[in-house]
Image (cartoon, rainbow, N blue to C red):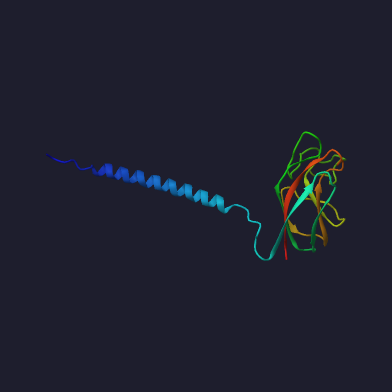
Length: 165
């Protein structure tokens, strides 16, 4: 009785299929590793000091407790939280997108309820969800909501402030 041996083309097909499955598995593993590698780590080394600051919507300005020097690199990143300049809505650090020229804004030309900052009593600047720049002045950093009518505001944003030492 003659025994059947697998056809060489069938072996080749199985090998090709196995290689394709292995290739797909490797691609998925690489994608997962890349995704994990993109997670933000706010401990960027010994030359950086990090602080998480909670910015309240019903306060014009929140004192971050962070003093900056003119020319020092400063990074501010929205981390979590929602706030609202009126009842019934919730926004992140970008704000409502409403009328940027409303007289209810602390900073004209910027989305209502956006995260803004200032150094000491200087002019406010737009922070939004990410700000990276050299400080234009020396002094205490303050963060706040772009709104002047605070009595009906609610919520908070947590932000991370990084500065060079």
